[in-house]
Image (cartoon, rainbow, N blue to C red):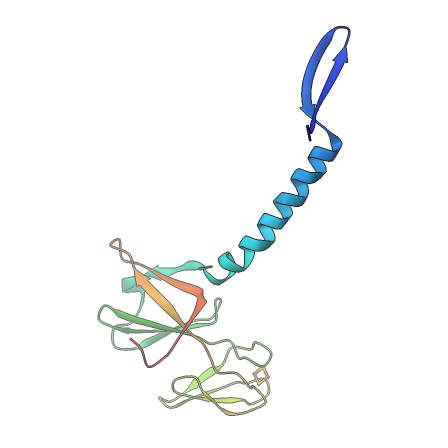
Length: 150
Ligand code: FES
């Protein structure tokens, strides 16, 4: 079937796509997007800059309150955990070296972010981190890594 449409006005003719052809094109485009979407949904990364390497205390941790992140630095090794409570998103507070307490509804997480007391039901998430040659530190906030893996 020919889906091209020829329009003529005052002897000048142009070829274009017919309405049926255009609708067919839209249907195929929508089908392609719906097929590809699941593949891209799993491969999404979202790297955000959290600052320069030397902004972070070596051998300690830094809280980025605005982004609700805990950044741990050991020389050039960076590890980042969310500080956003998995209940309703309040910034958790570090209690010594062993626990995190949510000030909102008193959920408690252990030192690697596992829930030890509700109402939160999900653990705090650790993210992939990379340090560029410029010294800028990036965190993939779409990742979720095992806190035991360095
Ligand atoms: S927001 Fe943290 S326990 Fe409710």
